[in-house]
Image (tube, rainbow, N blue to C red; front, top):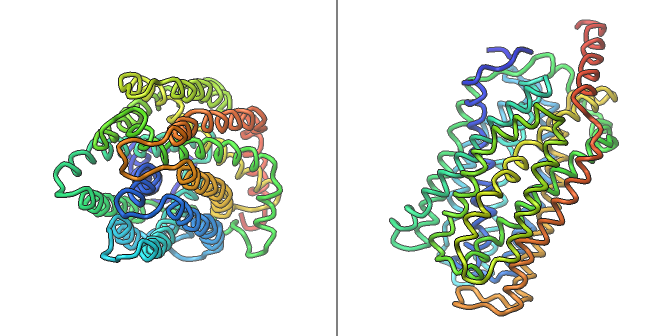
Amino acid sequence: MTTSAQPLPRWRKLLFGLGEFGPSVAGGTVIPFYFLFFLTDVAGIRPGLAGTLLLASRVWDAVNDPLVGTISDRTRSRWGRRRPFMLAGALPMAVFYALLWWVPPLDEAATRAVYYFAVYFLYDLAITLVSGPYYALTPELALDTDERTSLISYRMAVSIGAGLLAAVALPFVFDAAPSTEAGFLWAGIGIGALSAVPFLLIVAAFRERPGFQAQSADGKPVSISKVLRNRAFWLALCVMAAAWMAIAVVEAVFAYYLVYWAGMPEGDTPLVLATILGSAALFLPVVNALARRFEKKQAFILCALTWAAVHAALWWIPSHTLAPIYLIAFFAGLGVAAAHVLPTALAVDVLESIELDGGGRQEGAFGGMSSFIQKLATSLALLAIGWGLELSGYQAGASQQTQATLITLRALTSWVPLALIVVAIVAARAFPITREVHRRMSAELERRRAAAPGE
């Protein structure tokens, strides 16, 4: 079936949205929320070394995103620019994801760290082969700015809903497994397999626009420079990076906060994640309605202000007090839902600005450069978290932590994400592409295409 300018049917939006499971749940929720904890408390790797391992892995992650994106922009095949990569990466992604959660029988912690670096290296290459081209299809399937927001909302509904199911299911997996180590491995195998299937369905069900393949980057280095010179690109990237850094910081340390400050049993921590994701799923229609009622950037600012207040409240929760945690987790859902949808919805509208500036159709290069800078910033934050925990005196598995460690955990779940949210709000306020501006850009591009020879 060839894509058209008409709105996609709901069932096709939902089918396309299923591709979010792998990037968002396997790579974007479970790894950030659990992997650092898994490395330190299950695999027995020092926090500083674990943080360094994550930095090195994420730097590679950041480097391969623009590489794969640019190559896919310049690919010519009867299958299109994107689908061959998705087909090639789906099954290896599932295998390497499962191996991430296996503790190899190696005596030295440093040797185990090398193993995890190597497996993460291969896993991340595989998931980039599928996720980069998958994200590049979003602005191609939906040309209208509000239709793009709708398609992204479907993607994020799948992301949040699947994350909620994973959070609910994980405690049962851990309870059924003979050990915590086995529980993580079982979860890795199941989530890895479920990540691969949607991409195979998308490859079979969707087609790409032949005209966009003809208009894509011509192989000259100017293609990247057009992206980097665009002011709206940098502002959109700042909103995305700051919002997702706030989420990444909290995901990396929230399990520690819940266990050591709030006094929550380790096996109950997924319930808090389930509360956040369940609330976010309920708030998704609200976010979509706000984006249609106002400008997307205004909707983001409204939601982000409540999100900032939630993180400030975490600082004041008394030690070993669980009831307010669930209430705060519920109200965090509005900000988390907005962070999932609106920064991406802002960013994809930049593509017409780049094309209008003579940059051609470069969804892959745009997405790759966005991921490169965003993930590099997030990696530096994770490095700081790992070493911050070590320098504060964190002891893996200890029944109590030092006062310095507890203060560090509280700050990392409250004031640090709050500051990042403020940065995202300031950048969103300055974003120049409104609904009317995007319509004018799209009309001008249609005029140019109609006047171009051979069109």
